Length: 267
Image 1 (cartoon, rainbow, N blue to C red):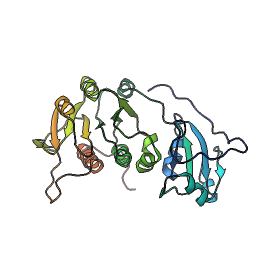
Image 2 (image 1 turned 90 degrees about the vertical axis):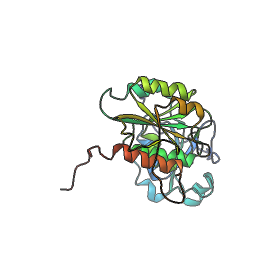
Image 3 (image 1 turned 45 degrees about the vertical axis):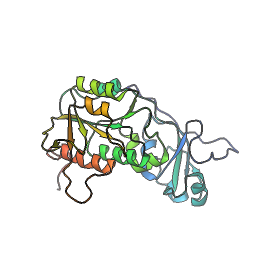
Image 4 (image 1 turned 60 degrees about the vertical axis):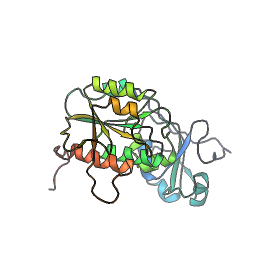
């Protein structure tokens, strides 16, 4: 991946006023302990302001300069109902990386999994998928440049820090990106209810790009045609389809369940 630049958090100038909720010149508020502290640890993330209530100030890293605030004032900056846990940060979107950079950063041998989303627009779903991808050891997430959820506070909150942990690539042409993944040695599996085999039956190799479609229409025709294989999850109940973020979590578990855990066992 491209070289990383370190940044310093600077206190705001005297008399500055908090910007309104949402985006301001590309910047946006992230909120909640995990999203904010993970962003603080990411040298690629440029942070403009940090606001925290008294109890959260002591939990922030010592080098961080944060403004003291109160819950009501903090809540007024954020979308209605935002669960901020007493801390928020005004951040810029992460610097863009391209697919070549992502692939160059993945070892050429050994298991590796990627997630590819075909026009998934709900930020809660994208955030939840990022969280599952980070939990199950995926190496990155590929999104379409258009008709896909942008970085936002809601996405960052649903990701619970994974937005600043997992590389995210946006591509103009998803079919071309899938072909590039194939050339890099990834078997591209499209998740679709009409897949002839289940994901388990497909006996996927160690290097898989799991392709998931939008919340309403699923995978587009061209995306399906470029996948190596369409697979499904075995559902038996009255509801035969899962939400895209739930489907991603189940599919990721299936891909890694036989892999030896890297975590130490109990003492």
